[in-house]
Amino acid sequence: MSVRAVQGLAADGVTIPQGVPTAIGDADIKSATHIFAIGCALPAAAKSSGKAKDWSDVPDDKGYEGQRDAIVRHVKELLDDLQRRGK
Image 1 (cartoon, rainbow, N blue to C red):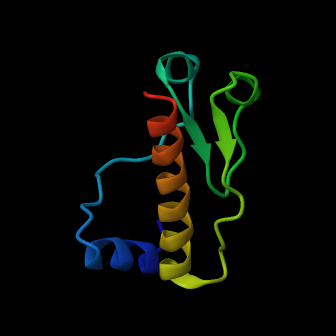
Image 2 (image 1 turned 30 degrees about the vertical axis):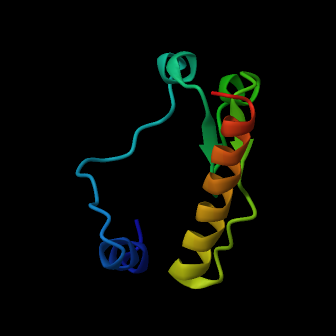
């Protein structure tokens, strides 16, 4: 993660997990209810699962706040959709 992202998350009170990100595997795809891509490509199996969404509209040129706001908007839309469907 970028220094700017780490600083922004810390300022928002988000704890940064330790470790190194890993690629999405078949077991991850099988057990997931939703898969989101933000600025990265998903494996073909994830795309074809019907669980994947591409949040490519999260801006990489608006700083941490712009990125955070776009992600928050997506999450709120997801929660609203889940609530409408009773899940």
